[in-house]
Length: 209
Picture (cartoon, rainbow, N blue to C red):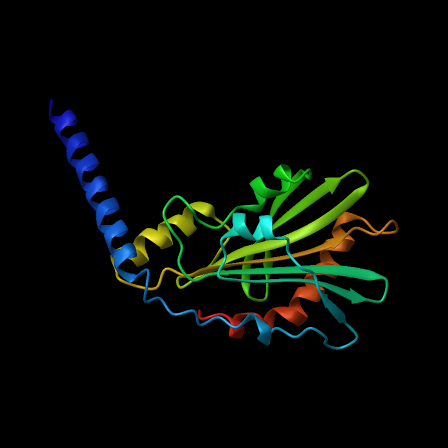
């Protein structure tokens, strides 16, 4: 009997938190400022040449991001992709999409998932493949509470910031590169990490956290 009462109390408390969070989010929906400026991220630097890679309307509609940046960078014979999505207002049930779901949905197989780090903090490292194309991917989520690779931490930050009356914005940053025919996964990852180290310092100033 006592355990049933405790369970009911916990359920009522969780429901109350969810209601308060939804109310707080709705109250701030119209006045949250859009203060990211992804245009600050350089298109060309060192011997690297970048080109804008347009995102189709259907994908943008699915993403529901406030600002996006999608670029292809060339350095010698190597290519690097950078995607940044800034979400000025996350919504419960409609958070940032995880690459672990998006890649399989677009025909890519995820061959491995590992923990990684860059100069800006922790990151997730994926090895993906579609037909003969294999790529190494590094990604992370950025919130007012810092960087994370966990979708659960991302949701917790949303709930916590909503209850505390803080901004509900977040960003998703993803780097990727193909594995060349004359290199292995470890070599491609090291090369990608070197590229990230040069471009990453210009990304955080373009975001509000």
